[in-house]
Image 1 (cartoon, helix red, strand yellow):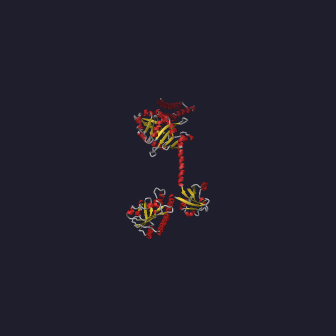
Image 2 (image 1 turned 60 degrees about the vertical axis):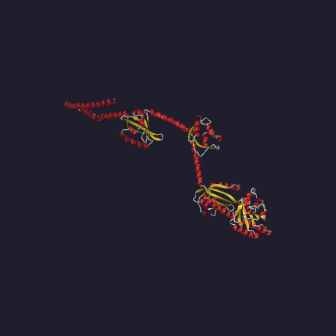
Image 3 (image 1 turned 45 degrees about the horizontal axis):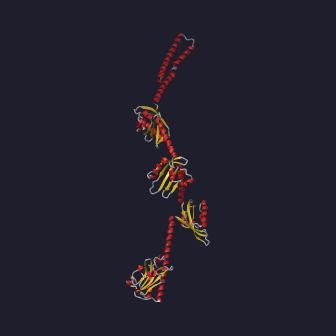
Length: 628
């Protein structure tokens, strides 16, 4: 049979499926060869398989090698010409074989009889050969006997192959069974078999374990008893999916639902199954399936959905959109917020892409965007876009520079129009504050509450205290206090740190550059600046007012002294005069001596009264002088 024959590959495949049994059955074939040698009186009997290039001897009585190249054998003619037999009585007289190496040399073949061994598919598996060293023929009975022996070889071939195939199937079944068991164990999957006629359900221990039970605790199990453990809210969904599977003959039944654990809590189950047996009317009889505990996955999915929802809310609040585009495949993903930023309506989204995005960029920012887009090192870029209604928006773009993702652009775009407006407002506010602070006539400065270092100072403070701006900015607030004032300053700062929002005021003594002192009324309040906690201070010079108050207090003391004189000293002589006058007035019988006595007393009291009046006048004149 030619190797170009299309059936040659099938024949060789068949040969190889039988060759696996040759070693285990060699003894049986050796006995058949021995019988053939005796029956036909030949020294050499060969029983072989012939594949694409080699003749393999499974029995080689009379030879000392077990295979030869098929191109060199007599059997090649038998196979190529698809003969029922090939008998050569004298090889030297047959020009096809007269110069064959096995004729001219060992084993010196002079007689050859070969018979093909064909299986039931009519593929030639090999040959049954009789060889002698001298010319000869075979009788009809010998031929019939050889035919029987050849058939016997074929029977043994088939028996051994079936035995081998059965053993392979058994091992394969065992391996598959063990593999399935291992897969079930490793994947933590419970199995069930449901008999639809009896409603009986056979469970494995893993399914019981998933539900928190021992297997015996769930016996006898039926679809009804299992159903009682299912969450009521999921029963309708299960029924609908099962009905759809059984009526529409889909590939699998699959459903996710909650079922109660032995401990009382609910777990999520992925239930999958398929019909494995039907009756003659194609009605389902037996369904096999699995239970997988997907509680963790469900919780993770629920958490993911919540997180995704929060992320979308955050993106909407922050006006932050995500863009991913593959320039090679032309595939892109734009988040909804991208379309919201660019005011792209639903019908236009299909055609909105990178080019439309670039076209919307303000003409003054196109080069900035182009440089950022093409520069792998650049991460951030702020630019303006002009929408179709001529609205202008500020956009902040941020991109990744992952070299592993060639041809892929990933980035986020944020609408920062309000932030830009706020920054402009803050800049203007800062400028107004700076102008107000610098040109305010009251000496002021800003100091760090932690280090007490002066961070800023206005012109009025520079003029009032005599320090230059550079000198002020190298000082702390302790440097403008007399040494005896510093402990009080430290106490005030300590109290301020614990009452940070309090507005504070107080009278203190400050020191100028020339070491002269001045009394000041200090007002301070909280100031958050550049993320540092500071205090802004206004220092009102009250030295003159303080001096005036001292003078007022001295005048008050003088007035109090005058009042004391008036209320106590003046009243004594005045009371004496009034008493004498009252006596003279009431007694008309006074003589001249008595009149003289009383007049002298009046004169003494009047003189004393005059002296007091002069003292009051002197004190009053001193008060008038101080006021002047």
